[in-house]
Each structure stands twice: as structure tokens, then as C-alpha cells.
Length: 396
Image 1: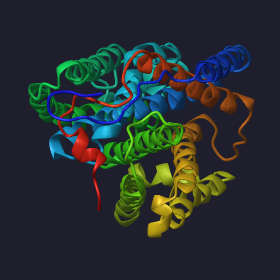
Image 2: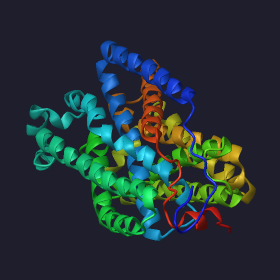
Image 3: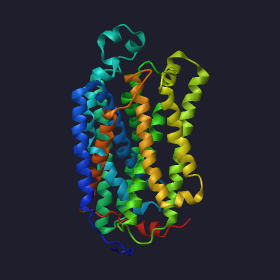
């Protein structure tokens, strides 16, 4: 494929039909299980729908974040892979729909929605102007619209650039990205406060938005890394990609694993040091009953294992190791969200069941279908980007 500036060896191929079959199979199975879950245990399912929503948001919104970071940083090595992030970002279109199960069950999930409870609680009464169901719905709809608008215009410019290689599209996306980042910082923080932190409305933490951000960008990066390696191994990308590209993904994964751990420990340390009852109870309830097992497992699963698995330089270049750890990190992020949400549902002793399994099956099927839908009849590589050749020739 070529334009006036350079020629690259890229043969456009449609994704295999088996991908859509797997997607429909998982989506159908997950959907049936989720419907049954709401039928047999609507409250437990409602809490799981919060995990489901925040997980899918992580993949979609995190992908948009990585797209804008590439434009703002002027990164070259990631240019051949940006289109994969653009496909995952399409998940943003369906977030308003995915939020409906949790929204229509807010009375079971969030006790600040109970008028009698608020009237008898000074803390909740002071927060009632913000923790209001109507205001909650309006501002989250605004969040979704902001994300969708930025995603639409940025990806539209990227796809148009495939047609003529016009560099002005890169400049336009640079401006869009610069405007997006402040909106991103605010909206992802308030989104996490609304759906996750308000599960315990008496709890205070000024770092929780960054905590969710750290998990979000890491999960999105893991999804992008796994997909890119799989597609490259099967010949869907341009020729000339090498281990230096894999190392860049491995180094980013390793860096954000450490960043997540740093933020998680900082949140814990500040609350432990302050020793204020309105802050400490959130951690104490996760250290009671068998929740202590989940808390220890979170440290091991989300930090210790991926840290040592990606510590060495060769491991960051090993495609098999990167694929496995990408899936591991995605599972760890889902486990992290479960650790945040489910203590509100069940204190002391908690045993996961088939309900907890149904929602991730639905999430994986949905992600595959959205990715396959966006990739249909499109180049998997941004062939019109003037940085593409430099990206292919990237060497450390």
C-alpha cells in the first residue's frame, strides 16, 4: 500500500470468520447466563453489572487514552498498531446501554438512593446534592457523550488519512487529543467515584480516581498488546516489525504494573497513617472473614506475578510471555474491580459462584464482536500516517 511519501508492504486481509463465531458464541452464552443470573439472584447480579460496566469502560476508554497519548507524545514506534486501539475504543458507543442494568438496580446497589437512610444520616445528607439519582444519570450520560464525541472525530480523521495521507489529519488529531486529556482526567475520576467509590458513600479517598485510572490504562494496554501480537503472528500487519516493538509493549506493561502498585500502596499508606474512621473502614472490611484471602490474592495476582514475569529484558520481548501476561493482567483487573465492589454486597464471607462467571464471559464476547465489527473492511494499519515508515523501522 502506498501514498506519495512512502511505500510499505501491507496486504489487507479480512479477519477470520472464526473470530466472529467465537464472539457470538461467548456473547450468546454470556447473555443467557446473565439473564438467568438476574432471574435467580437480581441483587447479586446488579453488583456484578457494576463490575461488568467498569471493566468494559476500562478497555474502551483506556484505548482512547493511548490513542491520544500517541498523538501528543509524537510517538513513532506505536504508529503501526494504533488502529487496534481505535477498534477497541469503539466500545465507548455501547457504554450507555451497558450502564442500564446497573442504573435500573441502583436502589439495590447504592444505599444513598434510599431517602429514609439519607434523612437519618448527616454524612449522606451533606452529600445529597451530588449523590442524587437524577444528577447521577445526567452527568454520566454527559461523560459517555464526551468520550464518544472525541473518539468519533479522532478515529474519523485517522481513517480519512488512509485515503490520501494528508498530514493535516495528524495535526487535527493532535489538537483533539490536547483538548481531550483534561476532559479525560475529570470524567474518569468522577465516573469511578460515581460507580465504584459511592458504593461506600461514607468513605473518603482523594486518590481513588487515579487508582481506577491506573487499572484502566493497564487493562487497555494489555488488551491491545495481546491482540497486536496475535495479529502480527498471523500476518495481518505490515512487514518489518521486530522484537524492539514487542519490548516497547513489555516495558509499558511493566511500567504500569508498577504504577498501579504505587498508587494502590499510596492510597493504603495515607489512610493507614491518617487513621481516620471514615477512611480506614473501607480497608478493614476487606481484611475481615475470607476477604483477607482476596486482599492477599490481589497483591499477588495484580502485582507480584506480573512484576517478576516481566522483570527481565528477554521476557519483555517474548511474544508467548507477553500474550499470557496480557490475559493475566486483564483477569487481574477484573479481580480488582470485584475486590472493590463485592464487599458492599457481602461482608465477612464471600464465595464466588456461577453468577460471577457469567458477566466476564459476556464481556469477552462483546469485546470480540465490537472489535470485529469495527475492523471489518478497514485497514488494520494506519497506512496513510506519515509516521508509519519510521514506526516500522523503529529500533531501540
